[in-house]
Image (cartoon, rainbow, N blue to C red; front, side, top):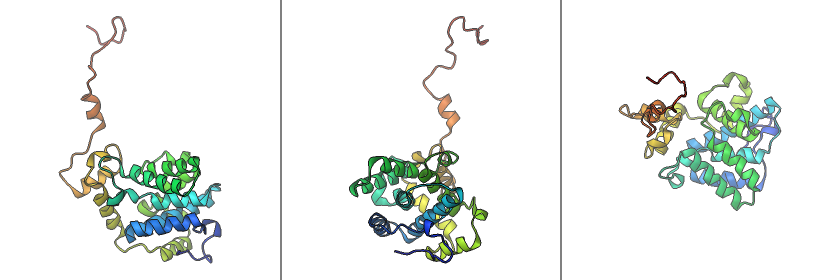
Length: 231
């Protein structure tokens, strides 16, 4: 298993040296592309470093599982016809962890971390594992907290798990390849931007349009409700 240099990376942020972590690594390495495997590994490292900085207590094995499985739903063998890719990845992690004897409560924590990793503003208020998977994603993909990491920390993570020179376009393409067959699953989430970027004619779902097109009559008021809308 690849590990970052302990000279510049705290031991508390290292990949766990356990049978479960090794099994996760082997499974994801054999399943994902190199780009996604290295990305997921960096997500773990950046998430673990964020956890240290925030003083959070959590199980590193669970954070590692959440980070490594978070994009598995983009892969054809783990992609459903109609679920969001985040749910597909969460379901794959759930099945894997249950098969390895992980307690149900811990499985649910990992499932939630993966399912919510593209939902800004909510994970930060949840269980540390949920919060830190999203923190790692937001750092590696979006660079939202780039300056919160020391130069040596970023360099160590990228040295261990290389970031391709064209990673920005590569990860957008990976997202598109994984969701293009089910664009309806992007309604209300950031992946609609990916479809729109690759397909200029794409018309994303509109929340207000759904409200206005619902079966509910628009002028149903109770007699005497004094709402001001009656003749």
